[in-house]
Length: 108
Image 1 (tube, rainbow, N blue to C red):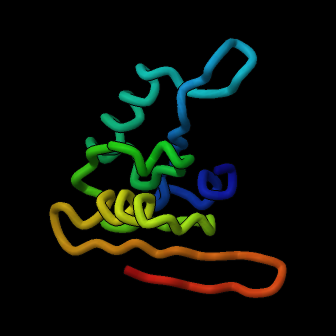
Image 2: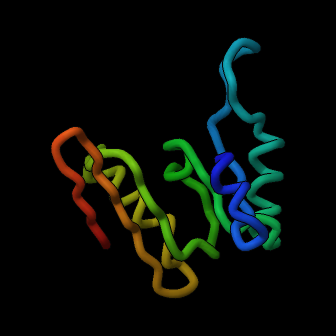
């Protein structure tokens, strides 16, 4: 996140993480999550860095690119990810798999 914020005005990034389960846990309240989405829809942010919560039931019509940095390729999660993009116009999902041995790039 810090690196994205330092890029300048062209990247207006924020984070979107799941709700906390208690006072000791880090997380966002539902009110904060809603504020993030409203500001994104209004153009205040153009990048959302999200945990897996970002692929579960969010309705953001304006998303045209999703970049995934994990290797979980279950069919259900892939369908959810693809459903996050391309609703208003053509979009894409890029997946970057990283390990000690190889890097693989996939595209919808």
